[in-house]
Amino acid sequence: MDYADLITQDKLHVWHPFTPMQDWLAPEHEPLMLVEGRGCYLYDQHGAAYLDGNASIWTNIHGHAHPKINAAIKAQLDRVAHTSFLGFTNPPAAQLAHELVKLWPVDTLTKVFYSDNGSTAIEAAIRMALQYWSQNGRPERDLIIGFDQAYHGDTLGAASLGGISLFKGSANHYGYSVQRVPDLAALKALDDETVRRVAAIIIEPLMQGAAGMRTWPKGMLKQLRTWCDERDIFLILDEVMTGFGRTGKMFACQQEDVIPDLIAFAKGLTGGYLPLAATMTTQRVFDGFLGAASEGRTLYYGHSYTGNQLGCAAALASLEVFREEQVLEKLQPKIAHLTGLLSGLSALPNVGEVRQCGLMAGVEIVAQKEPLVAYPPAATMGAKVCVAARKHGLLTRPVVNTIVLMPPLAITEEQLTTMIEALRKAILEVVN
Ligand SMILES: Cc1ncc(COP(=O)(O)O)c(C=O)c1O
Image 1 (cartoon, protein in one colour):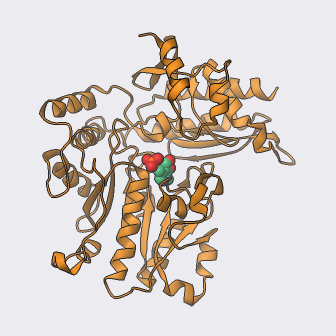
Image 2 (spheres, rainbow, N blue to C red; image 1 turned 120 degrees about the horizontal axis):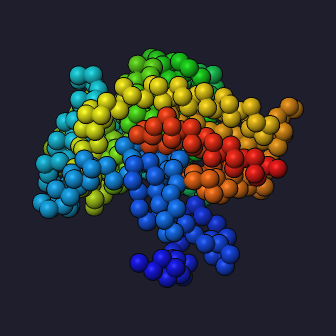
């Protein structure tokens, strides 16, 4: 393959997401073209190997080209790739729904609604919550509570829930009715008139990702569940980032024995192989949409690739790998190893707060530690460190000046050590 020619074609025609395109097009910028993946490593157009330090934007779970997932996708491909899910069903989608329900206690989350990505899984959850109340006796419940610095995706409705203005674009002016709060104390201080209108609360449990890997206080989620229960308000969990083992359990909410009314997940569902998402909910929510078609209680929402057969086959294989390779059981020593490595890294003069939740971490790069002096966002120190890390065989992406570390769960302790060593070298090079 003529990679140089392909890069020319990219520069001529492609518009990349979350990418300042003027910098991308600069003649001196040679884009990294990722051409192959094996386990936790990715390979570029020159054959150089990199540890996939952010699991290909937080998606990959069992490593790249896992034989079991590859085989499942190939076998499904020989039957059929995609068929409509509007008024039809298919074998892997039905089987996957059964497997997903089995991940929860009996009679809790029993219904699965498929879509294509994290944003649409969130859109479906919000639509379900709002429509449920409007057709089940509480039409005044039209308000969603979200948290400051939250990120729930980029489609207009999902973006309007978020609390990071940089990512909201035109959704700053459109979207759902949202009341944003900084924390649990502020939620508890809301006046009765506002609370009367609340349909649901949405949160990224345990850790907010796009906010810069910010952790919530221990026990907060459990208290939030109690607050919702006392008022019969729906709790929606956005486990698009935290789902599928990232925190050390299959879902983050299981760390605090919380079961939501609705949950959205995507990225890791297929092991990071194909775009598939799901919104799960309770029998109660589902039953609120039953009735003769003429009553207009149906959820009129969905996408062309809903229930995609290849995606469902990949997700089924990924869940099998979780079981067969005892992925969750093997995580605890890896998490402890990462904690030790991060504590070593935090001794560096330009490393500020280091936040970890399971196998996810945020490492803040600061100008000075005591007293704390942050680098201005315009200095793009996070991006510079990530570019420098490539020379040392590590790929990841920052959130402003926080370096995100979120390797595939398949990473070994030795590879974790290599990852932190590469980051250490990159930080020292950039700040000196
Ligand atoms: C917590 C959370 N919610 C939603 C999304 C949106 O997911 P997607 O990019 O698949 O639409 C993301 C993506 O990073 C996320 O981290």
